[in-house]
View 1 (tube, rainbow, N blue to C red):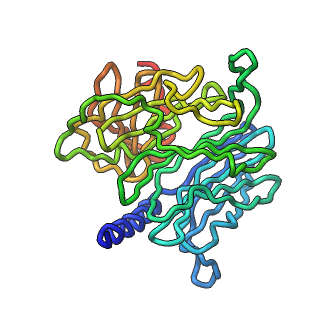
View 2 (tube, rainbow, N blue to C red):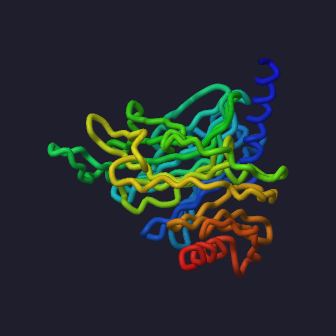
View 3 (cartoon, rainbow, N blue to C red):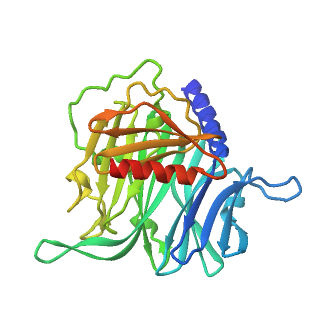
Length: 347
């Protein structure tokens, strides 16, 4: 057991080091404001207790202002910042990973409105638990149970977080539903799940892969869309079976707001879950975030290097080989991702 805990502590430190490689998120609002959250490192004379902290940049036209996320100044590592914005209340939400020590981690959620930070709330604070590859989405309606037994969408602000979790017992994709009431998180209404709970039980065999298969491609769960404003579509991997799943998570409100488990697609009106074998010969040594694009029954996985965007696609039941698009100042990674998205959407 002691060896297990020491090994896991080293894995937690490796997670923090991984996050330092490429750690920022960007969000553009309808009015053209650009929010960027990224980690910074304090100077020796700053007096900041944190090993690293988070800084929010707000660009509006030619003006840019900077503000530090207050709770990210506490001791430990702070990384993986993800953004979501509610236009109705003009509130920005920041969710990130905090490691107070090499043996524990937690998610912290803070909000920013009218130039002021609201206190952060801790979510799922556990020892011997590492998190990485955090993503955040938002929906503004929920399906409410009616007297006749049907469901109708009503206003409700919900944040949806996905990430990859690792413990001494294994690894898996995780999900949290975070209800927002009166501009603040409602801690008693938080739901935490393994994303595998939303996949129907099956007796499908383990998917065989090559000896040099790189399972990192399975460790980047993604919120790929929320077209209904009351549900989110999520794609995630399972390293135990080398499978990629897609599910629709559709919260409902009856006695409380929750995600029904065991209902195909996540709830009333949810799409049929997707499961497919991982690309068996994938062996590329991708570094940093892996982006996932989903268009119907087509998928693309992409990873940006220094000089190229590397990607592979799934279409018509077949995985492509890894391909590359050269990137530079004239054709940045955002443009390359848009080109891959267009290809997946039209072919």
